[in-house]
Image (tube, rainbow, N blue to C red; front, side, top):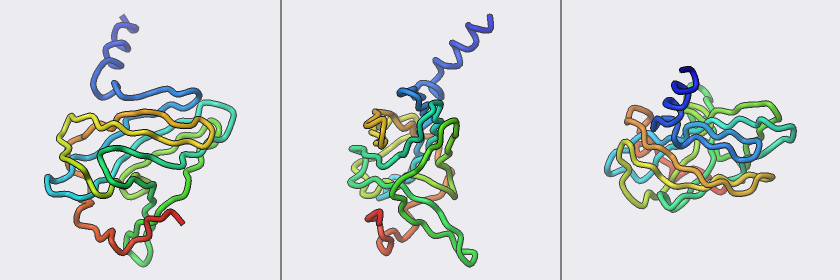
Length: 159
């Protein structure tokens, strides 16, 4: 009975896009549904390194956006500011969370709409594991509305 329950849970949409790639467990890549007129969106994910070798996430790309970058949110003098990340290190046995108000993906220049339940194809780029194809699930809206943040003055070059 326990196996049947686990199988049913893993077959549910919430787990359908989790992925193992070598020693990396990629858990629930998601994008909160952006407003219809949004030009940018944030993406979140959990990545667990179940191996014995350090790994680094160095990029992401998707046809959903003209550019895609890793960012972190820093709080300086009570103001949240986003800064690009060149890479995200994942130590052996460690799990990293890209989540609201922390590290996240930024998708700039959206190329289309994203509705709740949609699956957005993307490719994660790792230093050692190489390219890993995934899908971001569009979750219900409710996160930060990225379209209201001025990304134009930010340095998105990754330097």
